[in-house]
Image 1 (cartoon, helix red, strand yellow):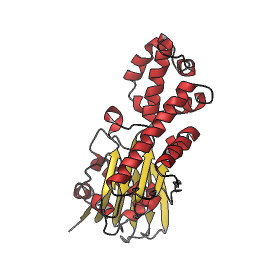
Image 2 (cartoon, rainbow, N blue to C red):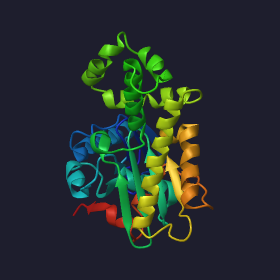
Image 3 (tube, helix red, strand yellow):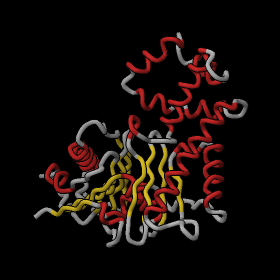
Amino acid sequence: MSDSTAGALAIDCGQTGIAWSIQGAGAGFVGGSAAGIDVGRPVEPQLAERVRAILDETGLRPGSLSCGAAALHRPDAAVLLAELAGTPIGRVALAHDSVTGYLGALGDVPGVMVSCGTGVITLAVGHNDVARVDGWGWIMGDAGSAYWIGRNALEAAMRGYDGRRQSTLLTELIATDFDDLELAHLELQADPNRVARVASYVATVDRAAATDPVARNILDKAAAHLTEAVVTAAHRVGLGRHEPPTVCALGPTFESPRVREKFVAYLTMSWPSFSLRKPAGDALAGAERLAELREGPLSRLVSRAVRD
């Protein structure tokens, strides 16, 4: 392999996995995946571990790193660069993964991106300002996310089991996952992967929605929360006052046909000529663009460091 340090390593880092690519460094283009990070621990040291593993695996010596990572609300590129002492990495651009998600989907032009999986975050970029809405985690926020949907489904299932409000197919479907539905809450509380497990029930709700009004109501409310976030973020940066902004919707929650349909319908109520923009690329493509991001509102969310 080449000893050139002209190449660039880009990383899209989430809780469940990492996607990475190296361009240049004597190998053209290579890419791969790795385990995600624990957002309950400092992120920069974990990123450094992943970078070292990638360099060892490939034998390549890229000189720059651009990375978007979950839970990096206060990214510190200098800390990460220090953690990478002894590697060829001499330049780091670091940001929250909402920034790289936006760059991948829309580039650096004004618009709104909502990314909804287990959690949800909305990022709006105006001509002069940037606004973030939600992304506050499963305890304090993430309204409309897969976790939010799953949590509401579990609650509805237990209301149906108790005989409170109306009965729902969700009680029957969720009961099949447990030996004893009355002990389900204890099993979930003890599960270290409970957040992802609760979020996985979005698929159950989606199936039930074909015949169950309770399930449909949960999905419709999720779409309403996501709509509220987009409209709020757009208005905070001066978009959407006179014409609909450019909006991209990313993440597996939008794979629910009902969530996506209602989301578009609700936004059309605010902007009659609204249409959803297909994303140009993914968050890894956004990470690849991060190092060269030009001056503008979005660039203020990027932390940079260069080794002396």
